[in-house]
View 1 (tube, helix red, strand yellow):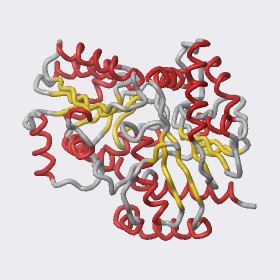
View 2: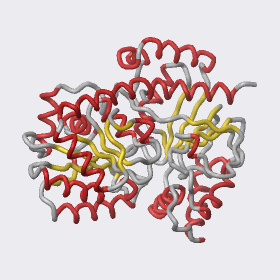
View 3: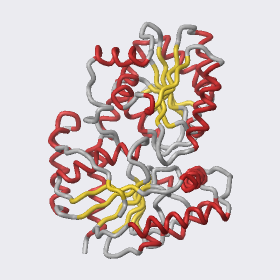
View 4: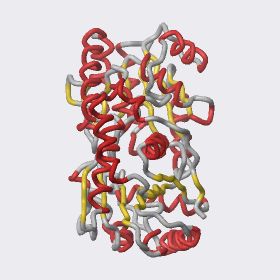
Length: 412
């Protein structure tokens, strides 16, 4: 069978302090008719990206609310994940088409994955394109099927989309971050927009003692007596890390002591990240003050928490973006963000409320330098961003939206 991801236990009552008692009460009310419902989430990796982080938090809470929730991952060979990364890029608008051989790699791996799926559920939630063909190749059974797409698919590569679109026939619902992300001619009867959310009780987002945060960053080599600018993301061309380095070089002209931390996460389903990592290392060697960190060298969720709390500015200069959880994570700590005007990022911040939206290297550098030059205003901007996250982007809101969708699909 598909490999099960084991998660810990959690109580929804623990979220009264961060999300409020009303939010917890609403979840219990929404979940009451769904007690015992069997729900399966399927994706490609148990770590290294926002989807995995959200599932790691959501599955235990669904169980606490009385649903029989599971999380399983698919496995594929290296070439399969090379192909699905190209699909991901194509859905975001990259011009490169899929070759016939690449399509066959996807189909052969998907057939093997479908043979491993042999359990009964009332709801199956399939995340992104990697496991998309599961329904088509396995059969629908008695379950309701949901495709949860975390990608900006508003302007997909036509050839890639036309290859994947037939696999969506039979799905009962599709969920996107924004209404505008819905691709053309979507063959799914029910479509909803449900933005992602952060877990305020996870190690990445819990309150962290300032002394401990400083110890953690000293331990990895950050000099705390110098201004700190940080980017936290996958090593992905769409996140434009090379553009961040170019902007940093401009900031250095005004603030020679500033340092840049590029904190990246490597995931099982993203082989392209290693090439991006090499390019980042090459670009960083020519510029003093840049350090590169990854989850494979000891920089995990707690260290990311410390980076987001102690950075003067966090940059998320995405060119295309599904949502960008790091924006909400950073704003939850009251730290200002300079971010690309892309995808779901404008949902989370506006100019002077959380940070600034930019569309060029020069604007990124200019806004970053302004925040470094005006620390009191920067802190006030970050705090206004925290209010937005508290209102809209905490995990209980996401679970409430999911439960409403489950109830809609399971009505007789």
